[in-house]
Length: 102
Image (tube, rainbow, N blue to C red):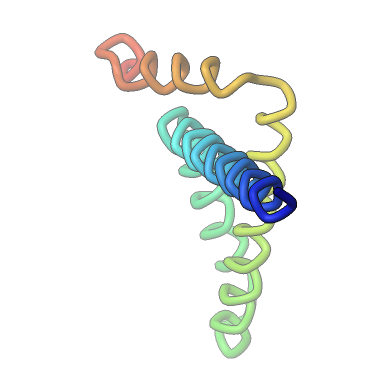
């Protein structure tokens, strides 16, 4: 009986984890479709131009790693404000003709 309960608990944890991963992936997709990630990309390009050329490669490597963390944190922030269904609807909007114009 104990093994059955433990196995059931493991399945529930795995299911919850998978749902969170899908939610986060959709949130990042929304951020990309809405243009937020493009804005970060433009800003980081401008920043790297201000760094002397001998240090630019190291700077860009460090900046790229920082951006991964920032995007992750922003996705988590959106996940606290919006439901997964909200994010799916936002994606649907940004994939529509009107959303693409936006």
